Image (cartoon, rainbow, N blue to C red; front, side, top):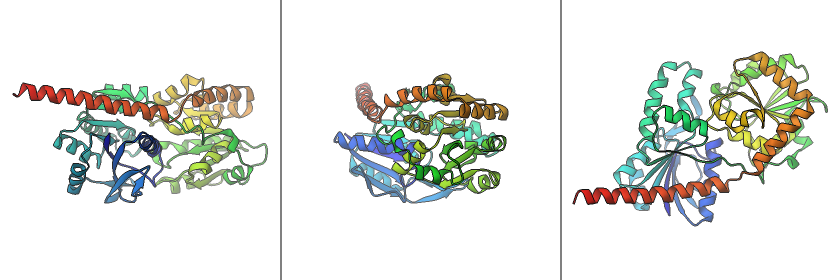
Length: 384
């Protein structure tokens, strides 16, 4: 099968979308499929035998680290020359418009996948008035597709509520070979929390440092628990403000980590703290689970789904500072409770890998191509 993909983000950026997309490309290579991937400039020219076409990009005003590309006419020439069997637009917003257009222009089946709850971000940037328009915009883009994929059941229900059509679930995954407790390292622990004693608890946050992640809400925990250390792994536009907020505490900013280095970071902490309520899934939760970390997370429908309503992690009210502090105190002082959720998290992670979701996606590709062929045949018959 020949697949043309459009993505708003790719390597060297690091986020859940890139993680899932890289796993998909590796699987498609093993299965003998050809991929042409359109991505913002700065990406490698090839990944897992997929040819990557970099499109000139510019920094996004609200998030300078993220570069957004707009579709150019040469995209159409490359799509036409490649002769794909279908087009998959990953999180369409800007560049993805080109994929949607050329699927229509060349009469190709179209799949879209939804990974980022952008309308929910409006509140965090004091742009609440834009939320209805954002839902309209993304609904309009996605409803051009024969199939729309959501990465959690909670997100799927949210999209249904906002009028998205042709929805299916794209299952979750995690690299269980990479993320393991055996990667624990005293040297990494010292890097995460340079001033931590052997008995001091070390909490870990992994992800983008952006306003919508609610990282600043962790600060009261640092004040209430004097020996608590926090390792913040990641980077982003909110970092200078966060460094100001956490000044004078035992919080330590490490910047980005990748691959085995990141796996060591998970394995070397004592618990994982997840304050965000705007995720569509939260792949970092599965990475923490696979490493045997107990998870403390702000309540939201996708997070509650991942943590099985509290069986696989501790859930607190995101609007209650006192509840978050008490949750951290309880988790850090009760080994029995930590052990119970840790074991359930490991059970969940061990049942996952990237083979299943990638195989499922390939099945969706075949089904949409068959469905599109039937529809095209029906249209041709009706016009004879």
